[in-house]
Length: 327
Ligand SMILES: Cc1cc2nc3c(=O)[nH]c(=O)nc-3n(C[C@H](O)[C@H](O)[C@H](O)COP(=O)(O)O)c2cc1C
Image 1 (cartoon, rainbow, N blue to C red):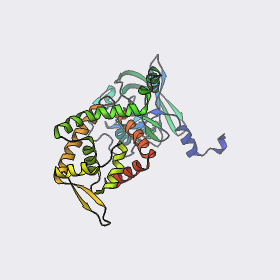
Image 2 (image 1 turned 120 degrees about the horizontal axis):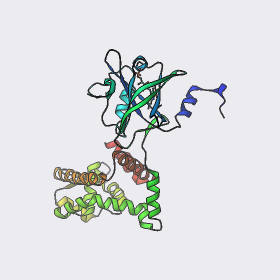
Image 3 (image 1 turned 120 degrees about the vertical axis):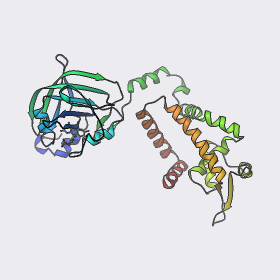
Image 4 (image 1 turned 90 degrees about the vertical axis):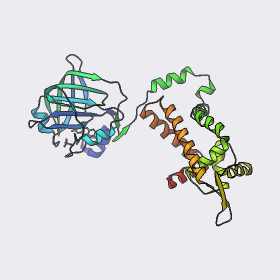
């Protein structure tokens, strides 16, 4: 237990950061007619009737005079895609509104687009709050776009997921091994992405192994056959002499020994062009599938999968390191 006398301001700030919040930008207009605003997560609801909200402003803020003298402000709840905007409005002294062309609200207060909700307020109370001033505003109008929110926790922006919906879905499929089995889910998602590529491969007379070898060399060319083989094994396939000969005969691959005499594979120009074409089809399949998710969910899904792939297997870690090095 930390006692008040032992308060360390960094520890105190960190402990406060354990409280997850949304992120807002609060805007107003100063006496000279300049737009003013800052990022704030001290926002909270106060009263439903009359409708009131509050937030607090550091006394050191350059925006203090504008909010003390003005009687209108707008609180914008930021959406998940507005992290850059949050960063911009948290930088003191910068021209925060450059290039934004905000709409005008009550009292000519600047209103920002793309937010999940916005509350236009009349300042009703100002309270001293230590090194901050607490502003209470009566909400005169608001809108709610219901977009996924930007979230701040422990000094970092976070993603939210609907845990209840995920639990419900899990419970609904309870007893079905396949529908809750990660391998089945990953495999089904892969097959969905692969539909377009498969059609393309049939047209080209190429097998899945051919495609995977071209892709491995597309990520990092001039690999020894043994290296390509260990990477291909991740998908349950192996490099065979027949596959290499077939790809070489089609003018897509060439092989040459390296300094130690090991046979290495390289894409020909034609092979590279084909690999780029197949990559575009794969990307289109990915974009199609991602259409089911929002931007944050895609980010979260990929981040979790990267952790699984990186952590689970020595070869995968090798591919990962290698890909990062070559990128
Ligand atoms: C996520 C986040 C939340 C913040 N919340 C607040 C807040 O509630 N009150 C505040 O005064 N400053 C807060 N800040 C810091 C201000 O945004 C920052 O100090 C301010 O924009 C500096 O510019 P100014 O001097 O023009 O106000 C926050 C910053 C971030 C990144």
